[in-house]
Length: 211
Length: 100
Image (cartoon, rainbow over all chains, first blue to last red; front, side, top):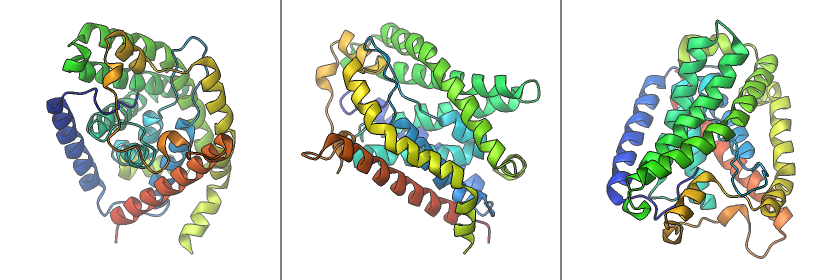
């Protein structure tokens, strides 16, 4: 889902950079001077875990596959603002150090995976966790990545290189990532449960300050 | 040292991260075997956009592989380097936002 250089028209690159910079700036301002104790190293640890997990491409035969993205996990474990900063860190390093995702498309990639996936995932979890925690985690992972993929489909679909084929790009991204996103939902549920069993102290902390 | 104490609490999670890095070369190999392609690339191919793809910055470890090195070893090195950089970057951000 990392958009390379050359796919997006310059205007859409610029718009996505502006939106992403604004949300990152807002997130940093919301958290400034508020992190305490275990929250301080949390951004780094979650970012490292997500980076490692993103290296594991799912080997699904047939030429259409994906890898885990993890924005919803970041948002759920740390709240959306810190989650956004962690995901943006991962995407920036992937772009600059590993050439994964283009520098011109970094604003768009951050929007899709560090903003849409993180905030949508967090909101779904927050809205449904009282009813059924596991279902809320699954839906957060699934719908978060699905909407992130649709956002990517819109960005490439309004670009001239894709012949303004918005219907095609949104359907391809939406349908495939809608199906593959089920795996993302399952991993999100298992990973958050795994972390919470080990660090149950994180949840109340997150509720008070980071959300 | 507070950070050391904190990292000790995260031991299991850090072990899982290390394990993911260790198995990553097998996933890279399997991806090659099955002809891994993401929906984004398929859409680009379908609409003739794929030939416009390029990379302004290919990075110091392009595509998670060190040119000329053993592909298995270089994927592991890429994983370790990437995880350490994002871990440090995350710590710096966390420190910068820490309450006084």
